[in-house]
Length: 212
Image (cartoon, rainbow, N blue to C red; front, side, top):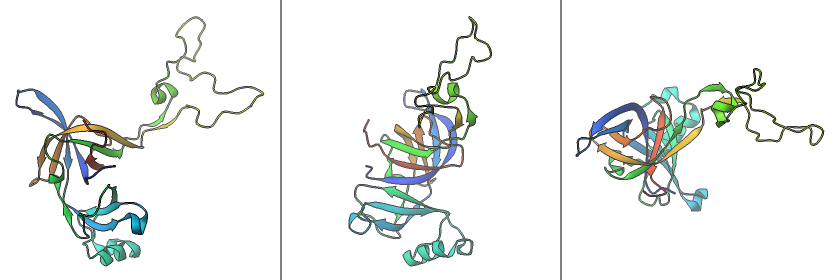
């Protein structure tokens, strides 16, 4: 499990140059200060985590339970609530701010977000099937998945069979991305490579659990 994490927003991709004048493709993540709303411990909740919010939202636009949750914590209401699972939460207190400096330049991070929805897709695109033969009698079934079940026994399709269906729109984590730059004043983190999700999506940035 991670030891430090923060919530941000995907801005988009660009490129920077390193010390050897080589182009490095990076993803820009906007990381405004996050306020701790609740601290969960194994004694009270069965696990350790912190609940954070970012941005500002009018309390009148919240539901009563949400408004009461922020009021009880004494924290200004934010746009969303995100829970970050951490190994140790003893250093966090309600109302504390977490900024982009939690992830320094050169460190490795894991980025989690909801991937782009791609709509209904066939078995070849969704699961990487090879497809049917392109000749020798194949007729209008070049991209079909092939046989998916048996006849009399068990006369059904097994649960979990790889079939056509909706693709994308799932929680995805990209591991071991290098932090190229961390700008505290601008509230930006630049990570090498791509991260899941469209522009404007919410991302969770935590230190790499598998190391470099």
